[in-house]
Length: 176
View 1: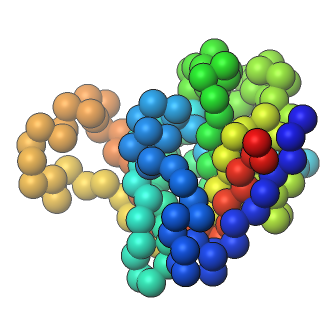
View 2 (view 1 turned 90 degrees about the vertical axis):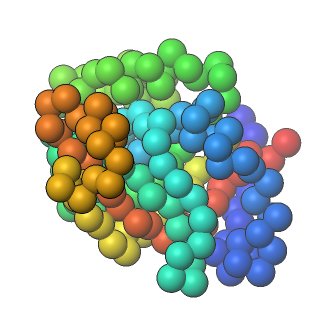
């Protein structure tokens, strides 16, 4: 299995092209796993929404998690979490991780994924890219603050997301 090459946060800020990814491609087409917890006790979920950019002078991601998701408990409890991006051959695993609860399944075992430590956070050895993230701010989506009423269609059960701003501490990419 190829090893990962790490891009430090400082390098991301000084040389943004060190990370040669298209965030729209990664988030929309690849999807990804958000994982919180420790190697001894963690959960992961599939996500297909999010943003990447610079905010507060740092490279950041925004991820959105509904409070009823099991992964929410792990992300809330810890300081760090990861985003693991996979190639197309893992689409079935991502579908599984997005449609089953970690309360009922060992998702990694079911999908043949290998949890691994990335700077104190849990990611997966099979991923192509892993972002190690540190929470810096969160807020809850509130219907009364929606400017465009069409957004409400995403919340027929009124189960509004919590948004996490997270500083990207490092990015691990598979060596080619």
